[in-house]
Length: 286
Image (cartoon, rainbow, N blue to C red):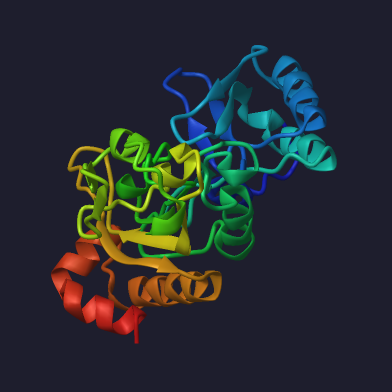
């Protein structure tokens, strides 16, 4: 083994996972925000995987990347070379993990929020933060929930509350056809909108040919306490259509609550259920 000094804390915090082989081989987990990488970063990964691994890069279930078959003696050199090319190590253990996000409204026609921007802001403030247990964020642009906001410790979803403008409506019925939850009915030159059924997806605005549906309110819907794994549980909707300042205030108080109340190794949803959802809700929505 090399006599050079190995920074074990750097490896422990930085997403290195020991492989099953008898040799000292590791998979290196990389820091990826919202699934976005530049072409220069991709070239750096290709070079690193060929030099230190087997020329392969694994895409994880959470938009992350891993270089496998890295010898233990090469871990420091690999990290240094990648960091010089703006590719940074990930994390594991009881910390905030990489933030996943969809393309959002900059690219997706159905996107209602800039999911990438929100993901970057969350990552900048919370990535790798030490917590009692692991903590996962997801940001999804609309209620289609491509990024599975309900399966994360804290999920952020774009939402839009529509408003019907009667004078602009031709009662063509396209909004009724396009509504995925039957919240709109068009009958005999009359339109009925059931707000309780509405999932805030904005599909009626997209499909209306006369702009008879407009934006009444838009913002961020927040889900808390979800997880997958051996004991999966869907998150609970905490609040809907809040503005960005309120969103980050809720995130900050949620993290504070988790730090204060969680037992070691506990997931956020388990802490909420043990302490009580109403108490948690009162704390973060004060």
